[in-house]
Image (cartoon, rainbow, N blue to C red; front, side, top):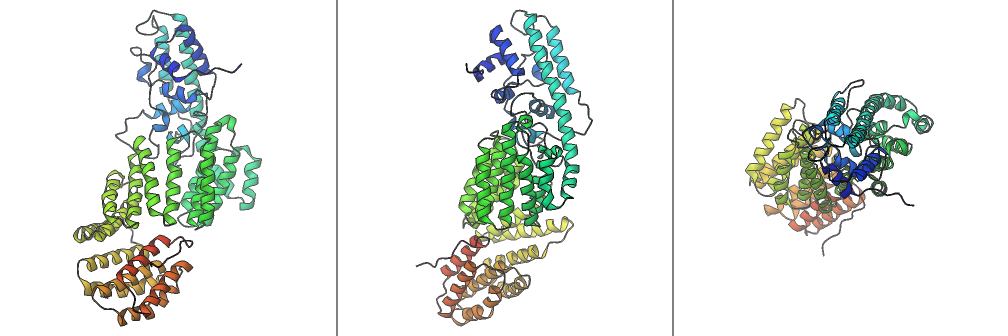
Length: 550
């Protein structure tokens, strides 16, 4: 005979104290049984500290834990339950929604499912608030009647109190495990990475202590950090994270949580491959991550993470419109979970993609919305980069004074950070300043500065920027009526130095098409705009070819 599982209506009736005595006792027993099928419903019905007070009903319906803001993002105005509430939900003994409570290492960005919302606890800390709740339950047990508005039933009250006592005992046990695993993860990571790369996978396979959810989480964080300077190291760490995820015990963590972590590991591998410009490999890894997520916990934060990485890949492939559209869903998720900082980051990315797709007016509307939500103290460099992009698109819209003001503010902020800009940033700031001069009608100033900038970009080995600066100079000559000889001279004298830089074959073909047009005096503003737009899209994607307009 098939096992019966209570539906949400039955559990909600229990929460309101409306169920019959026999049903109530059965549900209490079922709650203690460790049923994974009913876990998500039970998570939504667990009491907060106030609902365990003697003057209130024993249970209230609450928002699922998946909607609690991530522990990595501060939210002073957050309406969601306090920290212990997250611990209490994740520490339940039953179900996949609680089996991930062993959490990630301190400093990890986010863990799958409920564990992703748990702040780190110092090892050995004795959090007495759980025992306070047990005491509250005991007060209810001693109170005649057991529940307001119904006749006294001591035997029912005893059963209920025993159930809560068991839950809170499991809570303290889970909290201890969370703290222990998080504390051990950095040490295990160091030990694992000290081994030769070829031996790390075998070490994970042979040693159960390396088969840890927290260790996997820290490994993936390391992969993400390594991507900014060494894509091969990022790939290696993500692959090792996959090995650890494949060895996680589903009986201990729960099948859904293990699938969440496997999905995340493959998603991070896809991101590392994207950084290495292996777009085919990145697509394959992200597709596999998506298939693994289908058997996961359906945590919206995990969905947002995966969609964000897919949008990054679309952007690198030059599909700016599709990336911006995908980020709409990501922003909605962060809005739902009240993670305003991450929503701000998402809106900034969306605005940049809109601007790169030729819609600067939309960009200057969306980017300020993201900046208003972004915690600039948490990510000052990101805030600065967003303001630089805003200045760029303001100038594209013809709002030169606003663009200049934003640019001056960026320079001041960069100086106040206490670190000088790198060569690329300095050149881009000067390039923007020159574009503002051009747009403002200061043509002679712009012409003089563009020639010097072109040489500096070539010297720095920045081929795509050099090509775009050259096209800016050509545009200026066209606006001043200098056709024929002047543009041919630019193509003959300056373009060879640009083509000698690290530019993929399709981009070089587009520049050769410009050179041929210049030789035949067929260069038009439309042709220059088309080539410039193509270079922005195809910069990281050698599979995107340039097609001359008919």
